[in-house]
Image (cartoon, rainbow, N blue to C red; front, side, top):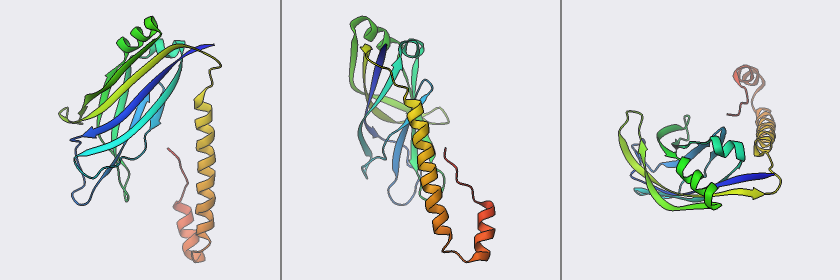
Length: 187
């Protein structure tokens, strides 16, 4: 079966909005490609520029990549004490890249800056992204979504087990009151 491979090279971010007043902040990126979502590693860098240097690969069936029009990239700020929150997002229109890749068999764009749009519609910062698309790859198309769901179930059960073992070290009255409110969930 033939399928296409879209590689996204996430290089760096510069001038991204900082929401923490004290200390350094860490960012990561959530990339949505069609119905698939991938999360990057947490950034390194303490100054104005953050680095990822990460290649993210999406395997797409021919019907998926022919229907794909855009890539949504959300920059998230990691927080130790509260939920992580979005800083902004960049939308990359892929139609021209995919069409050219279909005609030539492959298409590669060297890393270039893409503006980050904040919630209020203003621009602050940019992401440096590169793209490579290879069409008509021969071989067995494996559905990565099933593997991801299995990994989520495994990690959830592992963390629930650790959490439950840790609860045995709490005094019994506190254990029963805490256990009523606690549920182990995975996004």
